[in-house]
Length: 231
Image (cartoon, rainbow, N blue to C red; front, side):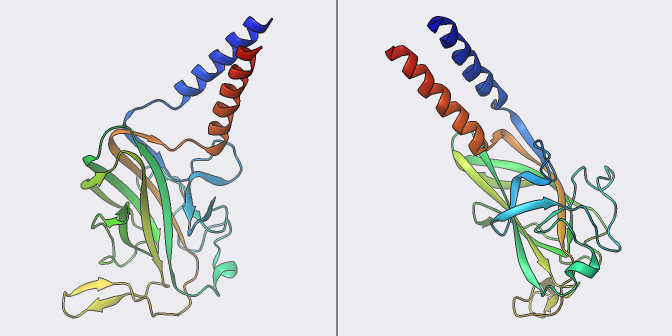
């Protein structure tokens, strides 16, 4: 009986390991929700839950729309209608995603496709700018944007991608020196609804960071195996 139980434990651990294999060209889509709790499985917004948007604002495209992005809108609240979010003031939202790089620290490339409300001001990898934004565009929340072959240095282990969304009701500032648009952190006008939808690819040996529940299951399995070995 003990031997049979040990076999089940080992098989369970093996199946868990195979459920999160190393893979090349890791692709993620916003709105991924395997456990059906209406929260994105991997993204956070300003450190909190990234909810799948269930009530969109006026003028937003209906997603998913594969001609724009295969992602769904995510935000800090599921209801993003004009009526509910109309009194929120302008601010910068950080949409963060973590992935595990299997190899050594090296340079790789990323492909991005996204819609943002309002402006995507930057995408950062481990705090370093990748030079991606749509500040020069008139309608960031209705038009899809893409940028492929973006170079970035990944580190061995856990890496963080941050999408920085400036929600300002369409307001942006023209820098007279560079003649390019920037976001104004001092602007405090009404921002209205906000959200982001994206699909993106990390080229190379990358996987999603395992959920805490998976790590707990693995730990329990190892503990159980050790227990039965002692007996």
